[in-house]
Image 1 (cartoon, rainbow, N blue to C red):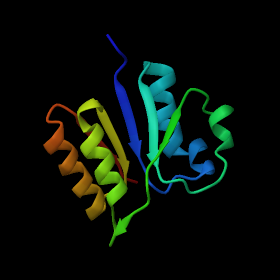
Image 2 (tube, rainbow, N blue to C red):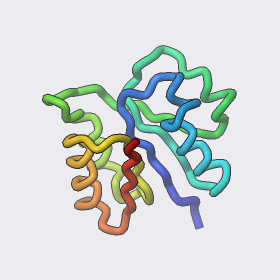
Image 3 (cartoon, helix red, strand yellow):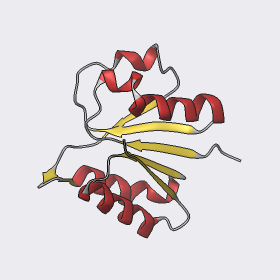
Image 4 (cartoon, rainbow, N blue to C red):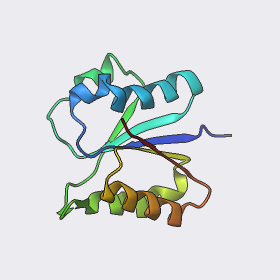
Length: 119
């Protein structure tokens, strides 16, 4: 059986986020629980150097940054295409747009788990 997938959806990810909770939760899901973990984000920097050092094995996938008010259409396109293949969708902060992504994901993957980390 293939590894389960864990996707952190945080379209504002920069390199420093990889060594903070944004990257560390996904990385430890990969390292400790053998999940196929990735961060889905817009390309916010030219170099994500921590990928090869501090969080080796964590993947990153870039999506287009197409904003419609606070909603990122790149996120919507990603979820429509990939939601059925995501076992756990991980987001940060309780925001209206994250709740929208939450409901879209659940509409497309009824068995998927959505986890929103809020401080």
